[in-house]
Image (cartoon, rainbow over the protein chains, first blue to last red):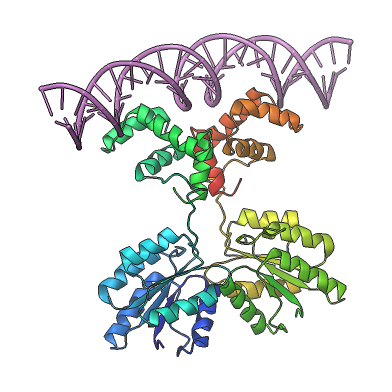
Length: 222
Length: 222
DNA sequence: CTTCGCTTTACGGTTTCCCGTAAGGAATGT
DNA sequence: ACATTCCTTACGGGAAACCGTAAAGCGAAG
């Protein structure tokens, strides 16, 4: 079993629970190997390397409230930074995010070892994940939700997101072509924008831009 | 101190942590007074009343993942249902929601006793909240975020919210008068709606409905 | 009852948006 | 080189939204 684990999690209640889970797994836990900020996490990792006693596993959240200025503000940035200084450390992401696509992308792009979403049975889920990591396997939680292509038939491209964001920021539709042209985004014609928007709305069953924007807001698309 | 507390929380890890907090407060906790679903919560409450041993305090989340069909799907519905059968029970809401306005509204409208947002020091926060409830005080966590009145010069009336919600649901502006008339909401004239919307947008410095809707979404106004 | 002031509604002109059609352009295949 | 196809753009008619002005409604005060 792991002997040295670091928890990066800004919610005290969640952190407490993860500590308890580790204890139950028989991981020798000295009750101090947890941090509330990403910057603290990276410093702990560095110090442990210098002390010739590096961490074996990092359990980290993805989103951190930025109530005080931090160099590293998100779990993704933290993971990238840590991989630079200790590529062999195992990483378990524990996040409210529960979309399968996102989890897969993290495993592929950042080479994380496990993704456990905060959900109904997340404590049991985490135990399974840790045991899986021990065997050098990747762990994708079975609780992850596949974004069904029925509910969400449209895949939003960056182009779509750009247009919708501009609308959401109050730019009149007729002015968007100038913006796109200035930023070398194609197509930039007003007709293309109109067609794209009406296509998205048709596929999603919407009638108005307002509806589309609410949908994108709720779905975290913008 | 409370002797009988029920936790309604669908995240196992959070539930575990709340249980630990209760134990630390010296609350006699039999390790079974927690549920993952709202329906289970209401049933426990009912049974406890029948057994002449009712719960004194409910600690509940607001949003529950609906992975299995439930009669009661949200914390708000749960609170309303419980208030009907046991109006004297104390209620502490423990949620990821951290906007002061929302918390205040819950205290005012649903008569909850405390609101603690899931945040950095939420375990300590919850202890303070429970002690406050014991003294029959309302507890609004100091960690709640105020949406500054500088950024939000306009006070949204129910009328405003109705109109904006209809827009957000895709109803064409021109159809709103019929809806308002049908629901006896005045003024119902199209002109009045136009004036109201343009007034709000002017005060807020917006130019388009899309912008207004994003603002209301972000601010929890709708 | 009349007047005053305020709110609500009606109306008309202008702008923006929506949507269908057709023309222009680039890439691909024959 | 030509044809085909797909993507982009231009254009125009009609609908919706926007905005100012004027009329109508309505309650309070005299």
